[in-house]
Image (cartoon, rainbow, N blue to C red; front, side, top):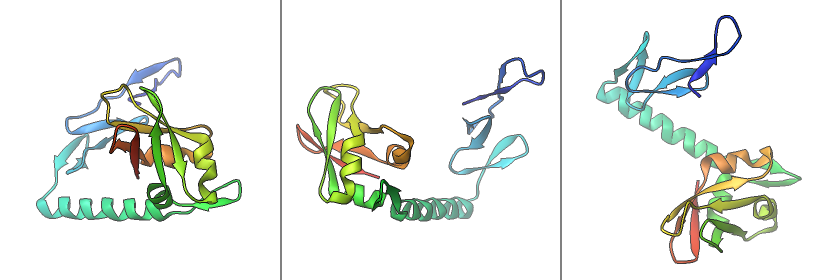
Length: 152
């Protein structure tokens, strides 16, 4: 992120990211509460901010309910959130435990990664691109010394 091919196509150059924005692929996007105005990000009105937050909430709900199909099993991120938890077996890793046969693929291909014992929040990592949505949208939060709930 933050680079694009130079005009001669011989290498990459850093893209110019304005204040209140972040690199996104080979371009940039304005932070929440800001909108593009030429080559800068302009603060939104309170009404525009409220509408932007409303749209983010709607997109998140749609994404959670979207059906994922892997090897004939169908589930949603909401299913992962409701039916799975993480058993943390070491300083850095935890295995996903899920109820229901439709989530066995998630148990087999995903695990939680924590940066250390003091870290109470972990990322979900899955092997294979078929579970990329789970990786992108779900995290683990410890609720006891050994178990974490999953939020998507």
